[in-house]
Image 1 (cartoon, rainbow, N blue to C red):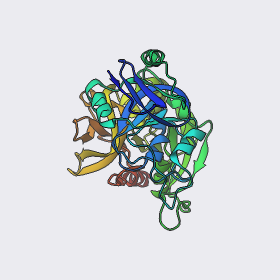
Image 2 (image 1 turned 180 degrees about the horizontal axis):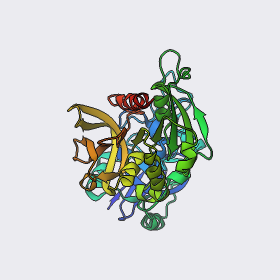
Image 3 (image 1 turned 90 degrees about the horizontal axis):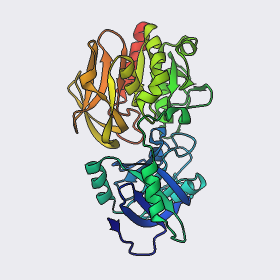
Image 4 (image 1 turned 90 degrees about the vertical axis):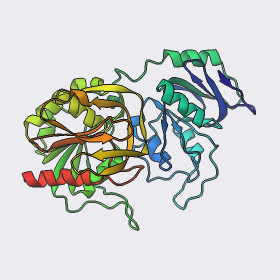
Length: 384
């Protein structure tokens, strides 16, 4: 099935099943091939596009007003966009924000990312929900010349995210120190000048705002690459170890990360994981992970905390999940999604080790879950 263009199209989105969507291109020109997902957040498109967890994915935004606040120098979650491309309903308008320094289109173009506007994102989102995250080819050509058969073939040839270790592509090249805290009016980002806890953060694709939240919780943070060994981590004599978010298949990254996590656990120090870090901690404890139909991507996901009975509205971005049916004895399920009942958190019954699937740093998204960083700090204080 093909959505016929109403005007001369300058971009084309080709799905592996042969479906074609025509629209207006912006950002960079060329072709990109990836998995297609949708995100329901109403804010934070810049943070979403620079979230390393989106490596290998084109993001469909269900909220139509994308680009209306422009872009700025402070909201990037990593140095460059990591998401492969962007699909939106309406073409970006001229930005209206006192923080804006450039347009979304210019920002994408300078960073080599393709985008398409004028798409029926409701129809596209329904297709993703019903059929699962499809493989796609996204093309932008100002002259409107598209070899649609070749685009569909490229989409069909994409290997998908299962079995891919993408953490090694987005992790830091070498270790570094982090002390910048969360943004606060009117000072912006300020340094943590009185840290109470030494933390090693293993970077599987860490977002800057996660590191800021650790600093705001009183942590002096040293970031190490995804390939760091337990020996290298423990050589810093940390009070706690943080396992970051990241992209790809946790089982693939886990081939080297799970042995590291197992050895870190032997040191009997507090451990906290988020997203991919949560999934690999579960693998290290003996559970399994599964590929989801279309994943969870948005800033409005309700999660229930079994320990308190409270419901938190959370930010999520994941295409894999921990299979709660495989959790071994001694591993307690702490959080579940109220959308589909999937696992969203675990902890060890007898040790200060826990992790969550959602993103408590709220970038973008609500701030209901910041207490998790404070709980990590409390665990380290109790062991001091």
